[in-house]
Image 1 (spheres, rainbow, N blue to C red):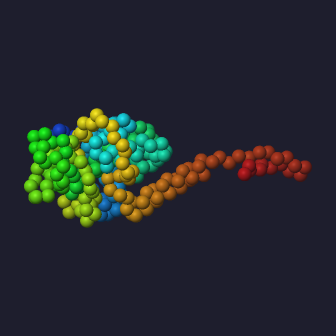
Image 2 (cartoon, rainbow, N blue to C red):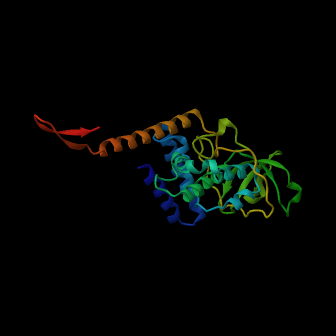
Image 3 (cartoon, one colour):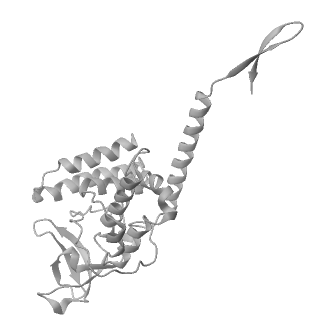
Length: 269
């Protein structure tokens, strides 16, 4: 059922209408379902986060060159991770742990969805940002702020500056410099009490100048002990299922062993 969920949520996103007025309401309603799943512990929190990323944003393919020149250093480190040689054998399992794909999903698709997951959860209400690249209001460049919500009609983030003033800023003019406070993190991109009415807008255009990858990241939020335990349980269950299939599918073989007194069939151990 888990692989079918990933495919279903991806298909639903493709069928979604482009009417921006409907997105906020839909995301709020579906967010309530995700919170209920987390409250009932139907799936690990990391799993529901992956499903929401598939539903509320289109997965776009990305190359190593594009990932390595991502302007946001924190996001760049998260994207480049999935192109490292060490991670290639882990792509399918990491993808399944996040509810992004099934067992037979090709590695390139897993990589694209993992990068999509990182980008989607990199932008969440409460994150600390710095304004950059503004031309009409260049005096605001370098100003720190906090993401409030994404405004669909204008396709901009509402950013609260240090003086309390709220500005509407395009995503490409924002750099994330800090994660939301731990007390504000919930099952979604905001806190559990108010699921955000914003999902990630299309990815910004990449800069022309290459950059160096920063410290390695895990995903949008650090894995908790509960997440790690859930992943370990899932891997153990998969291992047991494979062993059970091998035991059930093993054919018993015999050979004929003649003897002076009687003949018998002896099983090959």
